[in-house]
Amino acid sequence: MHFNWRRGLVISVGISIFVALILIWKTLDLQALNNLGFVESGFLALAVVMLFIAIAIEGRRIALVANAMGGKIKWLKGCTIFLSCTFAQLVTPMGLGEIPAVAYMYNKNGLRLGISLAAAILRSFVTKLVFSAGVIWLFVYARGKMQFGPVTDELFTVVALVFAATLLINAAYVLFPELIEKIFAKLPRRWRKGKFGQWQQRLEVEASEFAVGMKILWTRGPWMLLRIVILSLLFWLTWFGMLPVLARGLGVVADPVTLVSSQFVLTLALPFIPVPGASGALELAMAAMYKGIIPKAILGLFILCWRLFTYYLLLILGAVTALGSLWGKPREKESVIEPKAD
Image 1 (cartoon, one colour):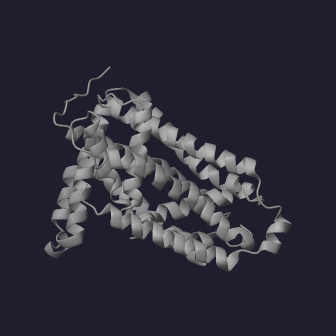
Image 2 (cartoon, helix red, strand yellow):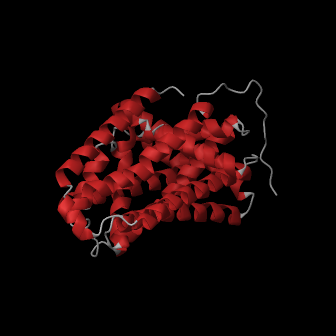
Image 3 (cartoon, helix red, strand yellow):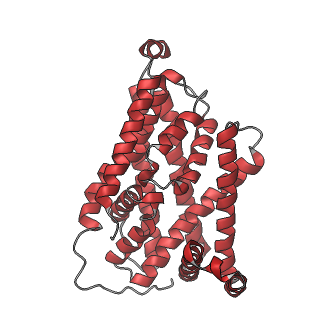
């Protein structure tokens, strides 16, 4: 890996802890905590169990994608790949280290390089597909019911539109590659240079690799793709499901749909935050988002607990697996596994 993960880790953890402590200092009210009937350990233990269930589900999905393309990755190895790649995502700006880390880990565990990149991009696309269902539900069907507030409401509108446009362009590149290339070729030359040109080239590579991955996966039959999509859906339902459980563990009964929908909006916005792990920005955004939903006396503590479960703990677990995997010595002799249809 070529990114400076140590610097990213220090920046990410340092900013996150600093902002979380400020939020607790500004919001914590011991008198109010006593009135709320603070801490129910059973729900906090359930949140821990849900976190490990989510890891197990995603480990299974990672293994399933690889094995559908001819690999031989077991469930436990899939879990360690997920933790290693999550670590790479959390210590790189906008999570840019995730897909290269997934491709590297797939390659290290038996898939040849071209197929490993296709598998990594296919996994990412399935996640986007599941997220698109959430975007449609929030933007079309639940827009009048969800009150995000003026700032967050505008944020969701912009992020949802960008997410949908990117997904459509990706799909168009796969379905009509020649047409999209002609459209880009007609743009002014200055537009095709710099950041825009780099984005267009990256989009072209991702689309071509996704097409390769889908072609291989489709030989396994539609049921295989459906299983991968279902596992992705179960992972995110379990992941976001920790929110109401954590709130209940801190003595607060809140509407689970509101909690999950609000955090989903913030998750969509994470790739646009140029700080490793979205540290600092995410904590502040959560404070603004959950104001009025979570009592002020417990708001900072709730945010810290969420980050503890979904960030700090994953950093620790991910570091343990990543240091021996992402930055270990490469194999001297790579076995090539060709994909086979059933």
